[in-house]
Length: 205
Ligand code: RP5
Image (cartoon, rainbow, N blue to C red; front, side, top):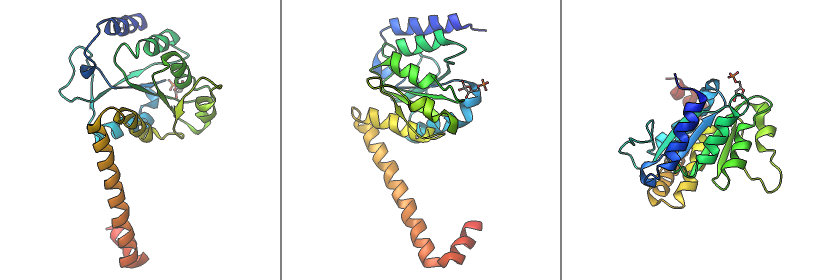
C-alpha cells in the first residue's frame, strides 16, 4: 500500500521527468476526502462530455489529447501531500487545478491556489458551509471558485481556461453551448404548444 511519502516521491519524479506536455494530464482534480467524490464527480462529467479522458498513469497516457487526473489530497491530514501536489503542478504539465473540499474549514482549494500560483485553481466548496472558507482569499492571493457543489461548472471553467490555447476545446465548448440552447428551445416550444397540462403529461410519460 503506498504511503504519503511514496505519493510525494511519485509526484516529484513525474515533475522531474520533463514529459512532453501533450502527454501529461491537462487538468488536475483534487479533493479533501473520497467522501467528496459524489460532489466532485460533476467535474469529471463535464470534462468527459467535452471529450477529456482520465489519465491514471503519468508514464502511459491514453490516446486522447486532453486528459484529467484525480487524487485525494487532504489539507489537514496530509499537508505535505497538498504542498507537493501544488508545488509540482506546473512541472507535471497541469494547466489548471480543480480543488474541492467540504466542512467549515475547507482549506485545500485556497492553500493549493497559493502554492500552485500562477497555475489557476478553481475551488469547489463541497458543502454550503464551505463557501466562505473557499472564496475568502486576501488581496493578491487569487482563486476562482464556483458555488457550493457546482463541480460541473468547475469542469467547464477549466475547459474555458484551456480553450484560450486550444481551438479544439473552444469548438467543443461552443457545441456544448449550442446543445444547451437547443434543449431550452425544445422545452420552451413544448411548454407553449402542448400547454401546461400536456407538457406535464409528456414529462411524466
Ligand atoms: C474535508 O472534510 C473533506 O473535504 C470532506 O469534505 C470533509 C470530511 O472528510 P471525511 O471525514 O469524510 O474524510 O476536509
